[in-house]
Length: 461
Image (cartoon, rainbow, N blue to C red; front, side, top):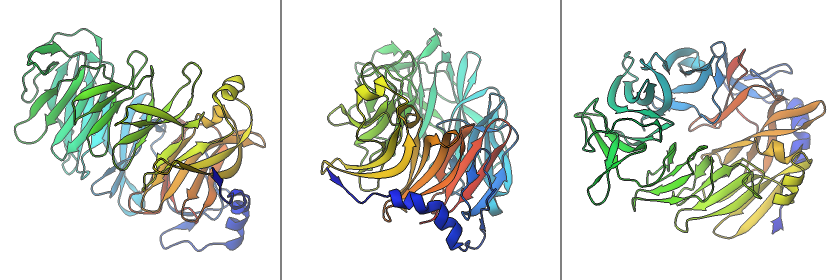
């Protein structure tokens, strides 16, 4: 294992260099001052900021819900909650200063119920909402160009534990329901028209079998059709690969995770009770990364599942942060000295956070020190997002600070091998990170139930 030049120096000089060189802000951006804050953090001084606006009072990000990019990436839709009510707010126009409700419980997109899942079409002009109502789930389609609240295209009788949506193409939405919370009457398994119930599916022999939930392909334009897909595996929230050839169900307290192949029509158990959190798919759709909680003598940690070998391999012990890079290699947060035994024995033991770059094809690992003191427990709460055009990651890192545990937002440029602290502060509220498409700007959406904000800035490089 070859160890490259550490990037600890870049961290040590970050704050001082940002303050000393007084960078010029690009047109339309301002430089963060010593007291510039997001909703829950302080931004590093002299960070170029292009957008900083308050979100509606009480709006808190929903953990694990990235922004939706709408209308050709001209509108950002933040998914959050206000007093337990899901609300999706769109920001557009100059400096994203114009805001509007994209969807909300008992409002736009879900006029008669609550939002279980929401997905934007490939061109961002349409959204699909899985709306839960008493005794049924409806899929509502809303054209974002019009001012309407949306119209239902399919209805499914029953109370379901989960619902997930994915656009296979501009006219087809994949809906996964499952499983039933309580038994519901079953109807015919034939394709149904707009508004009809479709709680059964036909297996390979042509027989109709009860679908404890199910996967359905919904044609949303023209004559609406609902086609059940024959699956003989327990279902939960299903996350498709970008190409739509594979999917993984993340599992829940009653349903183990499964890997589904549209090529074979079969499911393969992941081999753990779950639930897991999908972190990302490889560029070729043939493998994915996931974070799993502690299971017996193993975990928490990041794992890589190979869809061809049907096998999981350990990527990072105790961590929950890893991404695929554009060349198929993996960048993960962790520390190579950790073991399952040491983590189980002392989950609060301090160590220095490291970044490991692993190439599955070459079976080669390169380790860089971030120089930030953390612990296995803190590492298991971390997160990472990747910008493919600029080969750069942003990390939500929890660490030991001088006055107690802190949250830091750290960026790492792979080409430059430089890391910078973008923002930091005591741990409170929820933070969502995302890269603005086709730009080098980082979006921070955070809130604590009292204040919330949308901040877009340009990390130094």
